[in-house]
Amino acid sequence: MLFKTLCLLLCLALFDIQVNGFKHYVAYKRKIKFFSAWQQCRLYNGHLASIETPEENAQVARAIKAVGDITDDWYIGGTDIGFEGRFVWIGLNKIASYLNFNPGEPNNNKNEDCLIMKGSKAGEKWSDVSCEYEAEGFVCAFIL
Ligand SMILES: [Ca+2]
Ligand SMILES: [Ca+2]
Image 1 (cartoon, rainbow, N blue to C red):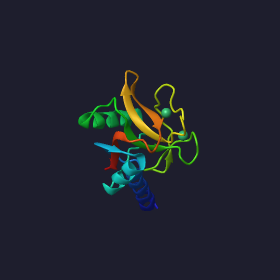
Image 2: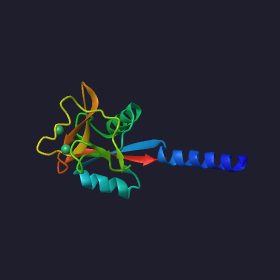
Image 3: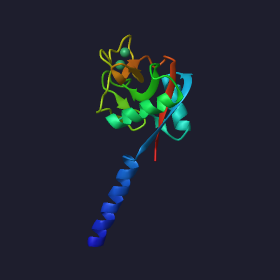
Image 4: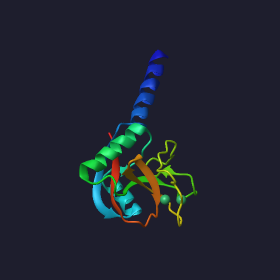
C-alpha cells in the first residue's frame, strides 16, 4: 500500500514537472504574422511563448532584448480568436490567467485577436494586434 502511494506520488510529481516544466524562451527577429510564428515554433518543437507569471514575462523580455529592440512588437502565443475578450495560450490550451496588458489594451481595435509584447516606460507589456500584422519577430517557449 505504501509502495503504491509512493509510486502514485512520484508519477504525479513527474507529471507536474512535464506540465509545469521550466520554460526556456528564444526570440527570433523575423518579420512574420501570428499564425506563421505559431507554426514556426511548432516546427522547432516548442510553442509560441506562453507567459503565466511575472518571472516568465521578464524571461521573455530578456530573450527579445538578446536579439533585438524590445520597443518593437514581438508575438507571444496568446489569442482571443475563439471567444472575444478571453485570451488563451494556444501552446498550452489554457486560459490566460496572469495578464500584463499595456494601458488601454486590449482594445480589440478593428478586431485584434493576437498578442504581442512591446516594451515602454510602463514596462514590458502586452497589446492585442491584428493576427495579420507583421511583427518584428516572435518568441518561442521550450519546456525543458
Ligand atoms: Ca479580440
Ligand atoms: Ca490593441
